Amino acid sequence: MPKCMEWAEQRVDECNEWEDEGYDRCDEWDDRCCDWWPCSWGCKLITWVCVGFVWVSKWVCVGWTVLTTVVCVAWDIVTAIVNAIVVSLESIFGWLLSALAYLLELVLRIPLLGALIRWVLNIVTTVFWTAESLGDALLGFLGIRPEKRLRVCTVILNDETGAALCDPSYAVDLLQVAADVLKREANVRLLPLAPWKYASGFGDAETVTDDWVTTEVSPSDADTLDAPCGAAGLGSEWGMTGSKFQAKVSNNCFFGAWRRLVGYGAPVTCFIVRSIGGDPNTHGCSLLWLVDYVTVIFQPRPVAPAIINRRVLAHEYGHACNLLGHLDANGHPKNLMGSPWDGTAADLTQTHLYDWQVVLLRASRHVTYF
Image 1 (cartoon, rainbow, N blue to C red):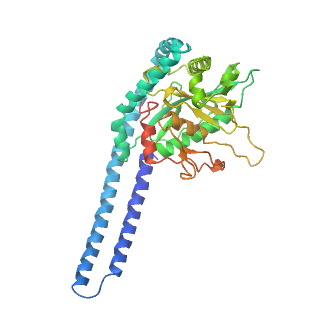
Image 2 (tube, rainbow, N blue to C red):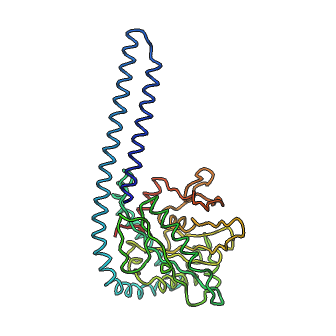
Image 3 (cartoon, one colour):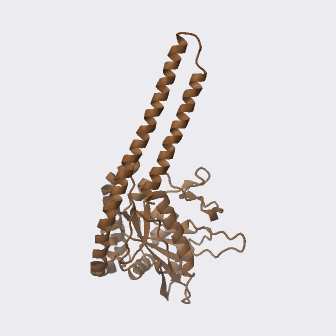
């Protein structure tokens, strides 16, 4: 069932709940009414006004739900048709565009100069495409949220000896959680960065397979295997570490490189690394708008209980897509951006997004209709 229809069912249920609660409040008022005239007459009049208001409000709620659902489904139909054309054209001509972009990205690997260009480019495209999404954001606040897309590329690094840090199945599991969470919470479809990937808003979240994941063929150095984060990560972007990550992005995520330059639908690359900031309790890192990649560590599965932070990749995608800060996990125990991870999210209860978070995420330059 399309997500628009699922949300419609939820909203109709909420309308019915509002109606039941409203009638209960009207009955409570009526029970407390005085029984002497003319007070009783005036009190009964207020009861009738209350009942009428609840009845009208319920049908206004239902009518608005029908209207927003029709708009949402219609836009899903339009985007499905247009995307079929766009994906076909991009799958044919995107290789040439990506080759040209690859040559330009060689400049972005230069220490200092490349970092400056990358940061300016990413900030400018972020501001431009976020501003362009204001109309869509307004519709999002009104409850109209047709499906959008987020293209991703996932790369497992090799250690200094050339051994892969983990099996692709580990990355597949994190990706599947992210695909399910983003589709359920924000109606955003996670797609691999590859040609001929057709999809529409009338299907469930994608089923992630091993071909979504690339394992590098050459060893990596300690500065990328043990990735810095925070201020250290921002500083390293200006030196060889930033150049190496840019090279890994260009070499492993070639198709769609042109989108990184123009910003529209820029893919987000995830690197599976050995550690982040030297802290074993740090499971992931994003440098927010300034880069097009996030880092996530391989978490060796504990003996007992067998719990790993499976929501970490969805959390880092949130940071990359405009959700800049953390929420206090104590005050927001079920939120995807709650931090720290509560350590018991094997059942993935800590994956909810508030409406304002959904609107911000969908306004990201990484999240687009086409």
